[in-house]
Amino acid sequence: MNVLFKKTTDTVPYSKGIAFDAQDNLLKEGDLNSYFSELRGVKDFIQRADALNGSWCTCQVAQKEGKTTALYMGVDHRSTHPLFYRLEGESVLISDNGFDLLKEGEERFEIEEEPLLFFSQWGFTPEEHTLHPSIKRIPSGCVLYVEEGYDATIIPYAQTPKIKEEIAGLSFEEAKKGFEEHLEKAFDRMKRVIGVAPVVLPLSGGRDSRLIAIALKERNISPAITMTYGRTAKTSEVKKAAEIARRLGLEHRFVCTIPSGYTRKGYTQDEEVLRFFRHLSGLSSCYFFAEYNPSREVSQWFNGEQPYVLPGHNGDTLCGLKIHQRWVEGEQYDDFNAYLLTFYEGGNRVLSQQEVGKMVEIHKNILAHYPKELSIRQKLECFRTLELSSKYLINSSRAWSYHGSNVWMPFLDRELIDFAASLHPDFRVGKRIYESLSDDYFRRHRISFPDDGSEYALSRSPRFRFKQLLRSFILYQLSKRKRYFSRHDDLGFRFLMGGALQQEVKKNIPWHPTTINGLSFAWWLYKLQQGAIPKA
Image (cartoon, rainbow, N blue to C red):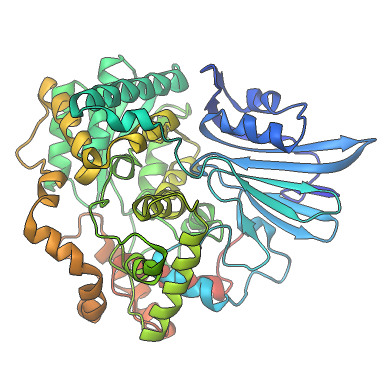
C-alpha cells in the first residue's frame, strides 16, 4: 500500500493542531506524533483518539519490513482540522484539502445531482461526501482505518457527547455551578494553549465573545486586542463591542470587511480571494468572505509574530439553541422529522416538490446513521454539531489561519460539551442555563446592556412556539418572496454580492436562491463546475 500525503511519501506520520490528553497534558504537533507512535492496532488508535480534548488531526502508518501494512487517520470531535482521502488502486492519497486530490484535467467536473441539491440548500456536503464522488472527508469524531488488501473503514469514536446520567438529576443551581466550573476549566486550557503569544478576539458584543473577553481580563492574558469587523464602524454592534472592551480595559479596533479598491464586481475577479475560498472549502463546504480582510489585517499587527485568534463558535449549539423546536418521536415519523430538518435553518433556495422529496430522503438517511438509542432531539443536535457546525460554521475559523494566525475555540472543549449535553433538557431549552450564567458574569463585570435579549424568554412565548411549529411549512410556501439582502448591510454583502456575482448567478444557475447564503452557495457551485478555482 502506498500512502501519499499531498502527493509525497515523506510527510507521514503527520499530525496537526493542539490537544490535551487524559491527564490534561498539553500536546502540540510534535507531541501528537509521539502520542500516536507505536500503535498496537486500530482499537488502541481509537482509544488514544477518544482520550484527546482539542483541535487536531493525525495520519499514522504501520510498517512491516519497510512496507506500509496499515493506515490510521483521525480527526477531532468537530473536525476543525479536516482530512480528505482518495483510494486509487494500491494507493491512498491524503490531504487536508480535497482540492489537492483532484487529478490533472479534473479542475472542471460535473457535480452529481444529490450532492449538488444538498449543497445548494445547506452550503456543505453530507457526512463523508464531497462534491467529487471519489474524494471523501473523514467525518467529525471518526477515525479511518485502511489495511492492506481491504477497503477503508470509518469508525466513529466521538460523534455524540459522553452523557453522564447523574448530571441530568442536578437542580438548576447545581447544574449552573457545574457548568461554570467546566467553563472556567475550558478558559484555563485556553490560557495554556496561548502561552505568551499575542491574542486577537473577534468581539461582536454577543454572549460568546463577551465571555471570552472576560476570561482574558481575569487571567491577565496580554497582549490582547479585541476587534470588530464590518462595512462601517458606525453600527450599534461595533459601538457596543467598543464599549465592552473599554469597560474591561482591553484595546479595541475596527476592521473593514471590504478591501480598498473593490468595485461592484466585489471579489468575483480577485484570484487571491478565490485561493482563500479554496482553502476554506476543501470541496466539502462553501466559503466565508467577511473574515478575509480582517484575517489579513490581524496577521500584520504584531511585527511578524502570529497571534492566537479566539472565535466564539459553538456557544449557541453547546447551550441548546433551537432545541425547543417540535420533533416527533418514533420511527413512523421519520419522514415528518426529515421534512422539518430540510427547512430547519429556513432554507436558502426555492425547492420544487420533487426536490423536497429528495431532500427528505437524504435527511432521513443521515438521521438513520446516528445511534438508535438517541431521541429525535439528540439526533437533531448531532446533525447540527456534526454537519452544520463542523462543515460550515466552524469552517470560518480556517479564515484566520489562511494568513498565518493560530486559532483556538474555547467553546469546543470536549469536557464542556459533554457536561452541557448531559444537563436536563429543560435547563438547555432556549439557552436557559447559559443565559443565566453569562448574565451573572456580565453583571459582575458591568458589561450588561438593555438590548442583550433572552432566547429563553422568547422560547417561552406561546406566539413564538406556535410560529415555530408552523415555520417549516410557511417557509416552503413563502420562499419565493424572500429577498437576498436585508435592509441593513453591516458586513457589506449588498455591495459585494449585489452586482456582478448576482448577475452571474441569475444568468447561469437554474434554481432560485432566496438568501445571501444561498446566493453564495450557487455562485461557488457555478465556479467549481467552470473550473475557475485557481491552484493554491
